[in-house]
View 1 (tube, one colour):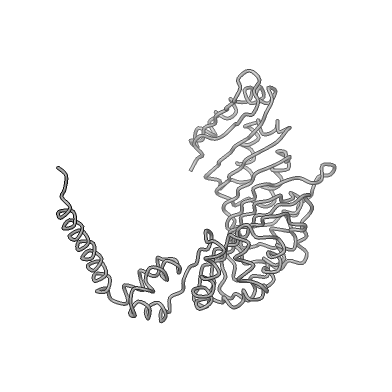
View 2: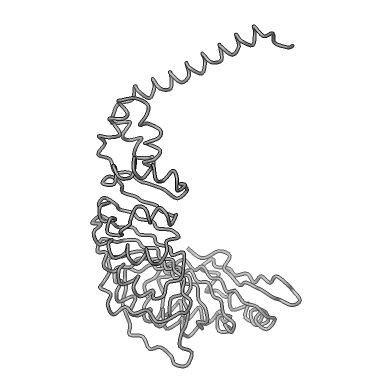
Length: 372
């Protein structure tokens, strides 16, 4: 039935009254909360959510916002340049001594906040810092000033362009004496040895490296990071194919978890790493990309390596990416090695997956149920 004009007006008026009543009721409910509870709510919100959600409600919430001793977290990953200029002046600057987490992903935000780079030292309450897609020229300059952040314990850095010399990154990271977690993402045009001679021993316990890291630099790296609990390197590469690298054994009892993506590193080289450095690990995640990795097909060699060099291992997550009919044939020949009593007792099973059964292009050999 079609509503008359007078009925429509009455309906709209009633609807508006309901909306006003709902708004007033919600506002009243919020105003009835104690200050302590409001501050607890603030703990779960980003500073910009607090500012735009509470600051303009009334004088009470303005005072709660301005007089709060709570540290704030700030995520500026999706802000436009126009909005950021206002935000920087009215939110960021007045509260920089209360920000504990800062997440920046746009180059212009880093340029506006930390120009010159020494300004980062004024954010002295920061505990966690995330710089995503930062230009290398800013990255190096800002790293130099992070030593003035006394509470910084977590650092995530990602460069948007090529890093000429990654050594300088590690030198400055090692100078951050309170740091416990670091994730470093970088790209290089050419992989070179990383010089750790100028690095002091670091406090980092968990390190994730996303970038080409030389196999030959691993020993000196471990010397500089004696407190590691977990280590992940997503592209461990070999530089010198002519000579074998002799390692001096290093005992790292606290290092329990290791994750590697191997490129052009053969089984004997991997064996040397575990024998010299990783005797105490309990979790191993390993992905292998190799043009000639026939040694990895031998399940008996894996049994010997685990039994003798990493006996505490309880989680084994293994993937081998390969191509070619010959590699597929070798895995077929050795498939029985990976069904032995050693593996079945640990409830660890393997699967060989080939995308093209005839030509066998890209293929994958992997664990189905890594033992626990």
